[in-house]
Length: 387
Image (tube, rainbow, N blue to C red):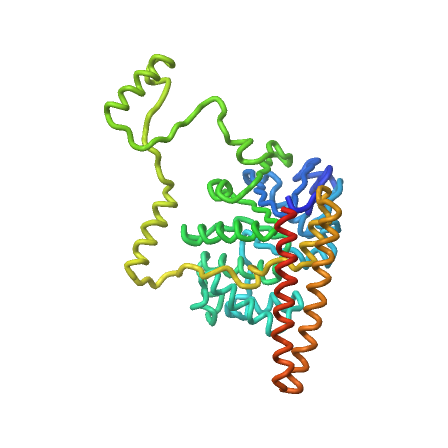
């Protein structure tokens, strides 16, 4: 994990709903403890009424806990600074039906104080990413449920959040959309984003989550990594190339000698998942240039979601790690300061070139660019050596 400090901490978290007279009616969340760390993808699972939605609403600051403590990024979930760093996709996308797709994203971007140029740039990138570029001028009230989920996912990322909370993110999506959402979640994880997912689609959760928490009756009944929870240690599986009848007979004879009758063991062929087979069929049709009037595949990840963390963020992350040697940290600080100085000089020289339009400063500018690249390369090498 990139950081030893949890991004979400809950201790003794409890939520009791009361009736009109103030009498306890339902204990939706009952004395729950959990932590979520930066860079994790965590699945919050459970049947209807198990306490998942109530927990999510408390994380968002929409409900106040009856008892216990809850912090998000070291602050109260209700703090404005906290909300700026959260992206949320609700189970039902509540959108202004008379706004177009591009207007919807522009509206949510304005809520986060983004400039008009940044809003337009991010909106175009997100629409391309979720496969709705062709519908940018359509009113969202005309969208199907799957298209509404896609635009809802886009609005949840307009602010480039550090914590993304997705409630049933693949609900209403076709298998192509599900695959794209899962790929996006894995990409965000690589960037160090933290994602909390609630879903009844357990196969989707299994594909992307590092860890799951299963709730029932307001309590967490099981938690752990997927390997810890799903590995069956009492059985073994061996996968080989296809066996000839002669080799199969030999294997069965050896197994029968050691385990008894054939009902005590099984030999069969591995199977693809239906999702993988479906995607292969669609991919083949695309390569054959088959046209469709339906939703098209999403584009590349939005550029602003691909941006690498700044030197300051990398340095902060490294210095928070207890096992980073002090000399390496000092070298990284020195390289970061050198890079910052070159950036300042480059900006100043660029302004001189704009004003004077003199060829001589352009030569100096090339030298400064080389110096800046060298400083960045030095910083990159130091970071690689630390890893």
